[in-house]
Image 1 (cartoon, one colour):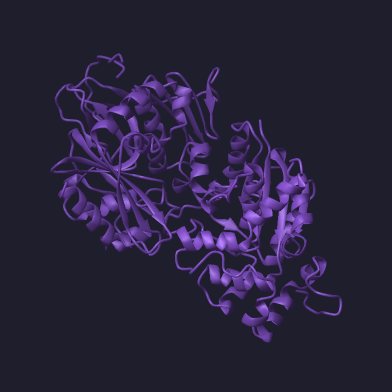
Image 2 (image 1 turned 90 degrees about the vertical axis):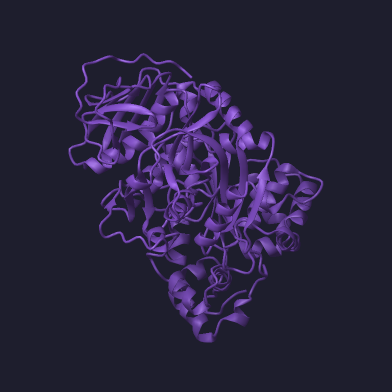
Amino acid sequence: MAMIYWLASYPKSGNTWTRAFLTNYWKNPESPVDINDFEGGPIASARTLFDEAVGVEASDLTPEEIENLRPRVYQDVAANSRENLYLKVHDAYTYTPSGVPLLPKNVTAGVIYIIRNPLDVCVSFAHHSARPVEKMIPSLNDPNFAFVNNPRSLQNQLVQKLLTWSGHALSWVDEPGLNLMTVRYEDMHANAEQVFTEVVRFAGLDADAARVRKAIRFSSFDVLQSQEKEHGFDEKMPFSESFFRKGKIGTWREKLSEEQAAQIVAEHGEVMKRFGYLTEEGNIVF
Amino acid sequence: MINLPVEKEAPSLENRYLAFGLTIESEIACPMLMEAPLAFNPVDVHIRYGVVPENLEKPTAKGVLYQARPNQFLLRLEKIAAFLISNGSEVQIQRAPEATDDEVLLFLFGSAFGALLHQRGLLVLHASAIDTEHGAVLFVGQSGNGKSTLAAALHKRGYRILADDVCALALDSAGQPVVLPGFPQLKLWADTAKKLEQETGSLRRVRPQLEKFALPVEDGFVNEPRTLFAVYHLTAHNTREFKMEAVEDAKKFGAILFNTYRGRFLDGLEMRAEHFKLATAAGKTARVMRVTRPSAPFLLEELADLVDKNFREA
């Protein structure tokens, strides 16, 4: 019986970067790992993962039935694995209609929760979804916002409840009984070596300084972006130009109007303050 | 193939059906199946109501809703039904009071029958199949990649349907892989129906809560085995171009094995060796192509053109 480390985040917050780093760290290869070959996949909400574990297809089940069965899918996946697993997840930490956590605690080894300034998330998410930013802001503020939520067609992922941006963060970090580490995207940039060393230790691996440095280099934005340019990335959305866009901090300052930024701050100010994205005086950090 | 004992009983011609080359006698009416002809046919499969145990004794494999051991398979769906499948010839159903017939039938002719066909030593693939002048053409690939949709589009162009979703293959007397006819129905999601200009108002939903419809295809169905000709492995990618490439050698066999219907059932049923043998035979004779389409928008007519042209020119 294995346990699961969840690589959890709201979309466009550094999850893929973390997977890139961890994969390069484990494999310790001579050259960077192929971007289409990262560990941490498939995503926890992958339809194939569900269908295989359950024995009937999610496409024949109602959304409530699917939600109620998902915790048992992760228990099954853990029970059938010899080694601890690392699974990417964008779902918020929610409870099923039957009243149990969607992602069961008894198979959870730990959670690496990656968080990013919601203003930059908004810009990056808009690019990712090929939507204008003004249409993205209401999604970040929508408590019913869900990914892959079209009941009229079949998608390769199951519905994922994201809640609001703040709701997502709080659902994870304030959930009692989770062994959870919060990592800020901005700190991954500023203090890569220190932050990724902590991630390695938290993920139950031995931290080797030279290996951490190499994995950071092999998962750098330039490497990821040039690989995408060369042979594409499976996780890019079909209508989006690229998955790895800028990887920079503070691009919201160029892309969001003052009014749009204020809209996000008005909705998410409390949580932004808590994670250091807003000062007590109301100034936006980063 | 395993020779299973065939029960000889006085024929009662009610609720006798044909599917997957088997004569089925069923206590539950199965309106989507072909009725068996009035001639005497030994019954291969009995479907009965009865009490289904909570658990199997000493299961050798388990999933979230199923348990399996050699010759026995148990599937329990809360608020719908429990199914016990034995020896490739018996299905016992215990239904929940609130379940509709449609719901019971959906899972009976999905996972439950898939397990039964595995028990019979057939090569059961997650595939849709049509008949062509060269023989059976199969579409395999992950859910959502367009198997049923493509089969439906080609059906609209006049090709007859052999199977949808659950597709069983056997070896004929000459040792050639043949595709057994499933039953005359295609399952379509609302958006696919719209693309095919198929109105859904008159169609039955596979379950009342789902936007997924059952399209009967009696007139365009082949009710006899067809020699396997080709397997198209459908994938979708965030590219702009279609891509079609021949799969060769051992990879052909992989493409078939990888698309086994509920492959994990085989572990508990201990049917891996049998399955492997048939998959090898299928891989040897079939032309296997990998087709990548842009994931969005779903260019259905373009995909159908490409595949249609490819197997016609073969």
